[in-house]
Structure formats: C-alpha cells, structure tokens
Image (cartoon, rainbow, N blue to C red; front, top):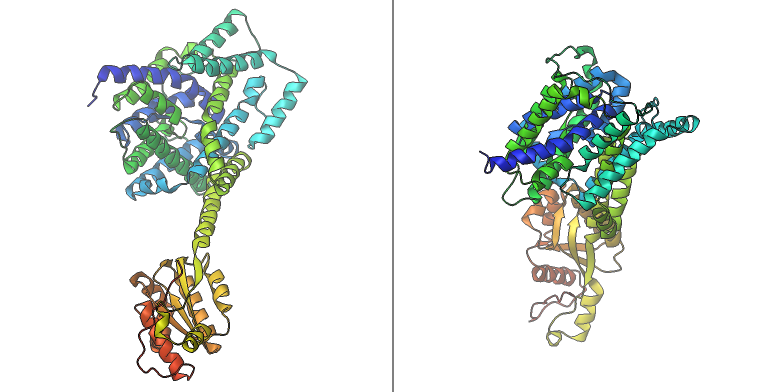
Length: 551
C-alpha cells in the first residue's frame, strides 16, 4: 500500500518526464531505435516495480547496458540483442533462486567507481556522431568509431547539430545547478525541437516515425541455432543487470530512512522484466540509478511511483508518438552527453584516489579497461587486481619475530646457565595469517635460523592457516630437524589443527613429542631436550623457566 498516493503519483510523473529523453536516447544509442527504448521503459519499468525487491527502484534502458549492447548489435543484429535479453532474464531468475544477491555486496568500491567513470566516458563518446550530425561509422570500438566520426565531420561540418547538442547539454548542466528540482532535460529537448521546426533546420535530423503503441508480443526474433554463440553475451548482460540493479537499490536505501531492499527478490524482478521486454521489441533493462535518485528525491514512498512512471510513458507512446518523432537526434545526443558528465562524481573519485595507492590503481585500471575493452571484462579485471592487492596487503601483515628469551627471574639461574639458554634456544612468535600469499616468506625467514639446538614456535597468534601454510611449516620443521635442530610448538589453535593434520605436520610434531599447550611447557621441553643432549646441567632444584616476550 502507498503511504502517500498523491506524492507517489507526482513522483512518478516527474520521473517519467526525466526518463522520456533518456529512454529515447538510449534506444537510439543501442542501435535498435527510439521505439525500443520506450518499450523497455514501459514494460520493464512496470514489471520490475511489481516483482522487484525495492519499493523505490525505477528500471528501464540505461547507459551502462547500452555500452554492452552496441557490440552485440554490430555482431548479431537486432534479433541477437532481443534473444540475449531473453536469455539474460532466465539467468537473473536463476541467480535469484540461488540466493546470489547477497554476494554482490563484496564488490570493492574502487571497482564500482572505476567502471562508473568508464561507462560515463563511453556514453559520452558514443554520442559524438549524433552530436556532430554524421551517420554512425561502422565498428564496435567506441574510440575507433569516435575518431571516424570526427574525420567525417571535418569533411562536411554540421554546425547545426553541434549547436543543438551543445545547447541541450549546457541547459541541463547549468539548469541543474540553478534549479535542481526542474527537469531541464525535457525542457531542453522541447526547446531544441521547437527551434528545429521554427527555423527549418534541415540538418537537424529527427528521430523518425515511431509506432503509435507497443507492438504485439512475439518470439519471432528467437533463433534457437544461435543460442550457443549468444550465451557469453547473455551472461555479460545478466551480470551487468544484477550489478547495476543491486547497486542502485543500495543507493536508494541510503537516501531514505526505513527502506531496505531484498537483493534476491530484486534479481527476480529484473529477470521477469528482461524476459518480457524483448517480447515487445525492448532492449535488456536494468535499474537506473539516476531515475531512482529522482524518484527518491521527489518524495516517493512506494512502488506506485515507479508504476506511474511506466504508465505515463505508455500514454506518451500511444498519444504523442508523432510529436516525439520530431525530436532531433542531436538533442538526444546532448541529453546523454550531459548525463554522462553528471555520472562522474568528482568527490568520490578523489576520495578513492587518496585512500590508498591500491584503490587508485584498481579505479584507474577498471575505468581504462571499460573504455578499451568492455564493461564485463573491466569488472573482472578490477576484481582480480583488487583481490591480488588485498592478498598482498594481508600477506604483509604476517610477521615472525624473534622473542627475547631471557628469564624473568635472573636470580633463579646462574650466569653460565643463562648463557647456555641464550646460546642454544631461540623462540619465534608468529603473528597474522599463514597462508599461500605469504607462507614462503615465512619459510625463508625460518630457514635462516642461526646455530642453535632448539627452535620454539609460538602459534597462538596465527589468525588463519591454509594447506600451503601448513605444508610450509612442515617443510621448515623437517629442514631444521635435518640440521639437528629440534622444533617445539605451543598454542596451536583448534582451527589450525585440521590444516596441519591434513598435510602430516601435526603428526610429525606429536610423534616427536614436541607439541605443547603453552609456551612455558615448550620451554621446559626444550630444557629437557638440551639436558638429554648434555648441553645443559641436569636439574637439581631449579624453578621453571618463564619466557619473556618482547611486545
């Protein structure tokens, strides 16, 4: 139930006004035409609102999805894009049933900011042909297409298109600073369309004829023989839809009080939306962060707002198609250029760049990969690099420190005995994780132990251990044993015992009777070993030796 139906209706109307030029622009930019963008906004917007996991989410065609769709259109044609959308819908529903939504929260912030920056650059560059008033050159690499468009423009400049695009972009950017609540995108598009009609700007090419209504649902585009080759693009589209939708829902939750989305239900809703949109000629859809933010800022409190947005766009499709068809393509290019500029959060980028060097590297690398390759590869590269840098940082936390072995009570032992203890026994405290990323450094340090007869390893501060760490520990023990050095361990935690036991390290220590519960017991065992070897005098009546750890 809507808590304030009137406010939700007004919010939905406002979002529809903002969404109209974006839906048209992204439809044109995807290669399937403005009508595909409108169909997506109507069908996907309504179904995602009904079945999704957020009360505030607004879905439809987005710039990020357009970036992924352009090369699919170039390779497989419009039918391939619609098939990919259908397959992506199935994959999203599978992800929802597998409860995969919760794992999206583990994507590092620098990766998100990096691909957002990269997407903004790609969206802006994709609009260059339209803004320059030249036909879109062949190719699926945005940098190549942009360069070819500039070359065509230099041969026959179209300053009318440039003026319209620049005027629309400037009005949106400056107007947003002056009156943020006013939807300057639709104001700018109307002004550009009126100017083109009044001044008979022949070089301002319009969108073209739009159907006065949604097409009947059809599966005529489906080519079963191409499903195998389209699986990889479908996975990319599904991954992007999941990532952008859950990111948008998280942003919406953060802008409100008391709202919390269900990530798995959101994936299900996006799956239903992407199953249905291609049947009506729509492109793959996802939640739109910008439209969702407008929805929240205008006071939406329930799904009624997103449903109203879809209904208003449907009315426009049925009642105002002839008027919409007169909008100049250059004006839509200006809308998307301004949208791309507004996507770049300079403050967030500056914060990430200043946080750590690793965060800055991940951000820049993800953005560059988005621009040079594609979004999915960029996210994978960003995740791999972020994971590698995180592992390196964790591995560097592992330390092996030699412990001050002198007893606390010097009066209990003779100076000669102190010298013998210091000469023959060395103790090490291991801090942090002992796993594959840093285990070999541990082995290298331990193998450099000097001329002693007993090494005591304090294990109580080892935070985690994997099979590699356990194997390295076993190798170190065996190498020291071959040199005639006995190894005692103390404080092995229950969680470490399984890894040590699986590689035989625990059995090796237990067979030799050199595993102890505490450090004092290990020291006593070391003394007994040295006495048995004749390196220490047999005890008469000697108080226990207590280790003093250097903190």
